[in-house]
Amino acid sequence: MASANTACPLCASPARLFFKWDPVPVHEGSLLATPEEALAAPTGRLEHCFCDTCGHVFNRAFDLSKIPFNTGYDISLFHSNMYADSCRQTARQLVADHHLQGKTALEIACGKGEFLQMLVDAGMARGVGFDPSFVALAREDARITVHRALYDPVAAAAPADLIVVRSALQYFQNPYPLLKTIRHGLAHASAVVFVEVPDALDIVRDLTVWNLVYEHGCFYSSASLRLAFARAQFDVVQVRNVFGAQTQGIEASRAASSLGDAGATQPVIDQMRRYVDAFPKAFDERLSHWRGRLAQMTETGRKVVLWGAGARAISFCTFFKVPFTQMPYVVDINPNRQGKFLPLTGQQVVSPEFLKTYKPDVVIATNSTFAPEIERQLRALGLTCGFEVL
Image (cartoon, rainbow, N blue to C red; front, side):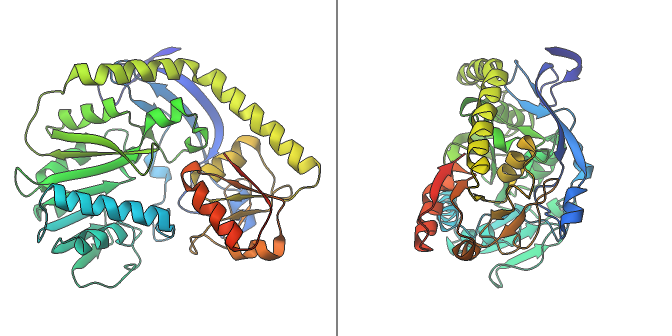
């Protein structure tokens, strides 16, 4: 139903509530050190609204101040060869398409500088990163400098030929101050910004319900993403899916533009509207299916393990209130997450090698995009257990 008190943060039009869930953990990138801390993890609410005018989805209960972007924060996927290969191809394409050889890249929320490394390996002369959770570069390279700080107008005083923001814009309910700063930080009219965000259409169309976590304060459709950049006075070059249908990337320059081509975005908004209208029933059906499947497996004494300890595992365990006594372990290939515990439900994160002694009956991949890679790793470990995909 519509709410007169809820305005879309992008276009200020009235938005309507279509999904609620309470409580959910506020942490995805910071797992907990002990089971006790995990079970007492702070919580928030999901109150997702849809804007019929621009096609944007956002959690009106989101509070960015609850999320600790410190040195313990780690959502890196670069331990996956499949993901790294996709990012490497994106870096090469950006450098080639925009003639960035010998120029300067700047990345906001750069983690350990993995993508900056790929950009300089593809021909850029220098990479500069900003990330308050930064600890050390994944690979030492004199061409790359990372500041353990947030990107701000002072940082923008050092212009760049390419500014990259990957998996961060969704944390900002109002993206315009950041986009304005980024636009100011582009060195010249032909400089480009590249931003990756989860695709809202994937959530509502393909029912990627496990991606509904507190840290994702909003989800952009291709229509709302174009609108945000046009309103921030960017010239949108293209919007395209990257790394499958779950993620989309926008490329834009700082040249001022109109508010975009309504003829190109309206079909996307209409499509989003149809899927949003159907979402509550479809969500219940998805949960009912997996509730029954999980009960069938655990009540017969089968040992079930999730593979991938990120947002989707956290949502799965939270939605079903899966106790760690019923499912004690979640696998993750990121060594920085191993040994820690999922918030609220307390599952311990273990390495893939742990499964050789635990011998699970069923492994469930939490992300369908990684499923082929995960199944290959399972078989390489000599495991013949059942394999399913959320």
